[in-house]
Amino acid sequence: MSSLLLPRSVTAFVAAAAVAVPVAGCGAGGSSAGGDPGADPAAFVPASAPAYVEAQIRPDGALAAGARTVAGKLLRTGDPGGKIVDLLENRLKDSGATYAEDVAPWLGSRAGIAVTGVRDGSTPDLVAAIVSKDDDAAGKFVDGLKGTQARKYRDVGYRFEADGDLAAAVVDHVVLIGTERGFKSAIDARSGDRLAGAGNFKEARATVGTDGLGFLYADPARIFDLALGAVPKGTGGAGGAQASQALKGLLAGSGIRSVAASLDVAADAVRVDAAVIGMKTTTGAGDGPGAAAAVPAGSWLSLGVGDVGGTVERALAQFGTSGGSGATGGLDPAALLQGLQGGLGVDVQKDFLSWMGDAALFVRGTTMDELGGALVVQSKDAAKSKAAITTIRRLLQTFGARPKPLTGVSGAEGLTLPAGGKAGAIQIAAKGDRFVIAYGPDALKDALAGGAALGDSAPFKTAAGLLEGAKPSLFLDTPQVVKLLGARAPSRPGFAKAKPALEAFGPAAAAVSSSGDVTRLKVAVQVP
Image 1 (cartoon, rainbow, N blue to C red):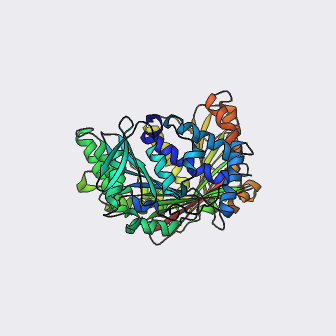
Image 2: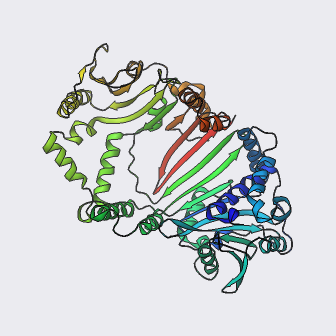
Image 3: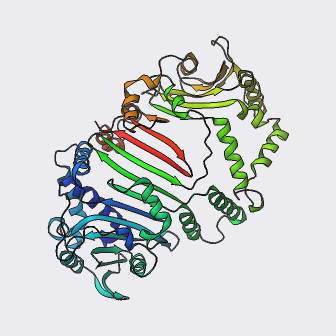
């Protein structure tokens, strides 16, 4: 019994069930024997839970079909449901139960699992709430678990397995299963504050929706307090306490109330819609997606950021007023910048941030000899970005480096810095409205040339199309990355095992947007 019901096994069981049933094609089942497939798992979780994950176990229609199709592609099998059910059977083996006879008859529409606390410095308390569509069958499953004894808490009788610290019971059409402390917190929630009724949780659900295959909710402040409480007192000394206080002040000053995400699956794609709720945005009016699309064609990674200078300035200002500095013992951005100016003669705002506009990072190459890329920053003031080369050269010399003049690039001010690898050097150059830091074969030349753009390539257009109207600021050509990994470590067991699944993915993209105090992240990857 203990091999099934350790805390991590509870997580594995819920996750496997969430995948197995939809891909097995079971569909949504009706209730019987007093079951309720519409019950809300979050109603059995205390409102204080810092993290919660939920899955639709019996979706129907396009969502169920998409889950089966994608699972088949990833597992390279025509019967993905059967393969995953076999894994579930292995998890249940030592408990004396089987999936088909003892679990499937009662397994309902949704399941959720929550972290309710941390004890002994590192052991999490968990509780899973799995909706039952047949309470009689669910009760037989719980009562038949090997190695358990009967206990009672409040008015609820439950089974307890001491070696695995696991409690289980059927309560109001839900199978509750978890560590004993986590289980008891769920029982307490019946007559107290429930996560399903908490304002931040309801806001998170409304923001990203719960119509997909999965849903995640996290309260960053509670997670931080939980992690801080798990650290033994005195660890890290005064410096560690100051750093923790500074981080806590920064988190509080950010305004973040919650983080949420939903998972959706289609026949040819997997999508995640995530949101950070309450965060004070620092992004400017630049064009990050435009910068990401403008990098050289053939890149397998592109990341665009709009108005880098303005974004950094706003972030520093927010940090300075968030409680993460000054009296809290943290780092004071203003003092740091003044120190750099006094000690090194560098005015970060004037010498760098003032001229920095949109920026993009690109990486390319599918062998180690071809690997390279560059950071490309659009300059708002060509004279200032050109003068920055002189400042950088002086700083490098101050720290003992010996940069050499840049050669072979007409009209550019720049330098080269010796580095390892066949590319031989890092090149830094300013030319016109572009400032580039490059490494690898022809990376600098292509970054300055303005030739064929990644945004016009078929992989980029495919990935962008998966975002349903949002413009990507991040692009990843997964097949090229897999090819590079194969060239780097072709015989490593871990890669060889993962390669078939990795090869099932096509290009991926992500888009970021802000509205009010909600920052959204949409991620999608093709599964062709």
